[in-house]
Image (cartoon, rainbow, N blue to C red):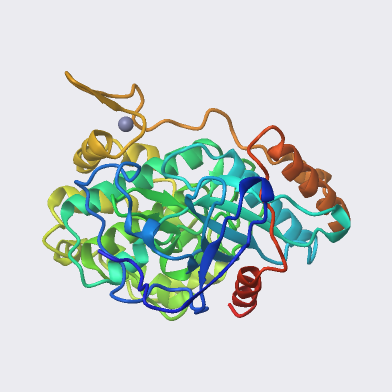
Length: 437
Ligand SMILES: [Zn+2]
């Protein structure tokens, strides 16, 4: 069940110097490609034991580039402190301008804030150099073996059990994010990492932001990969809520069932047309916040009846229960769309919940007499994510100081700090791969 080809030549070098730790080397695949090779992603097995108990195939693979995330390049490396395989991400173009500075700082703070098994978080941040030389930020996260996009396009079977346990975890992670007041804004299969025991984590917070409670405040339209973009965003709505993420999950749910993208259009207008082909022409009330041009486009066209029954043809897994939940997520009007939290109460997810908490989670445990379940299967965040710091960032230099201080304070009292050895052959290979992608 190999996820990645391992027959390619590798070079070795010391990326993480640290004489107090002895010589710790990691290997880097000399190929600069970012996708898996040699058979594609294996379908994770839902019945297997937790990954911590069984060495996974990736743990036996050499270090290599892996690709996920809209921003930045991710490599699989070995932490010299404990020999554990982890993912190393270089945050790109941090100090290019104030906007990128704020974006990266937000993502960094989010990665350090998250404490949830279905959301990727920072395990560590590499020690920055003196502030005058501080140009790049490297974050270490847990290493995952594949992502849902690779799983969906692979030829291997995807059972109803897989779909239920994946969907359960997506919604479980999403409930946590939304309860912290965070909109992900780019939920797509490639941003849902999975490993061999079916554990799923939402990643890539490069586009995430804090929910805007004031409906009069405009929000950017440059969100969400087009295929997963909610109709209100396609229609130029100036203010949107966490329901845009639920729409994306609905599209992914259909894609898991049908093994193909639900709304695969060439342009935003065609995207909207495909949506109305399925859902029918929306009532005027559902387009209340749309821009005039988009509303006119809908009203100019022929009146379309809904054709939701085609969802039953996605696959044998498209049962009445599955289609019922899907239809609650794919609602044109965001005010009437089901929330991530309410979707978790749908009976379709009962089996996924049971499976997850029986053999995959860290919140429940087994004793000789049986399984002891946690009190809250889908816990919310313990506090909202704060973004007040952004208001005090007025220049790139100030941003650099804030980020430098944040990383330094974050590391205090923790493990032996890691830093990059820029002279190592491994680092040179890494950095040239980063430049070419
Ligand atoms: Zn549990």
